[in-house]
Length: 222
Image (cartoon, rainbow, N blue to C red):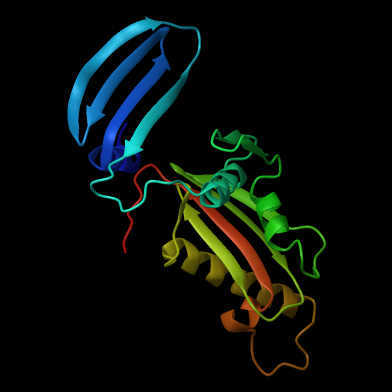
């Protein structure tokens, strides 16, 4: 793996009492094992297969973590989020401790995400507004829907990672949304009683939105 995914695997490796990886590709099963950041068994072919996929089996290092018990609810929240962000993918979470099993699959993608966020609220526009676009190696998806509350509930993601501090992608989204709504209002003579344009703060009220980008070389801060 390369990029951010490779960094993530390296961190898990360093913090695990053991980490075993199997990769099925090109007709073969490749395997490698680590322990506390050190290679325990080098990469080798252990069989043939017609399947493809990756399995990572690891145990958090009890010498580093005070607790190594996983929270089903925490994993459920994150895996459901990933299913929203990757339209059509199916993710199954199976807790073998309790036999509790849940499967996540959303054909609506981030539209379904917005509907989920707004499920207990009174909607202004019945269906989420959705659009997407691609430029060079950047893929952008946006879904938004207004409700009758005064608060904003917006999320942004880059390569499935929640960018809670925002960034240029959110700045661009807010600027474009404000410009387009003001332009539409002027063209349709909807601003007779307003002395000035609607501001970004005005348009945040009741807004639920999800902005998701896929980049080949993202730059993260914070």
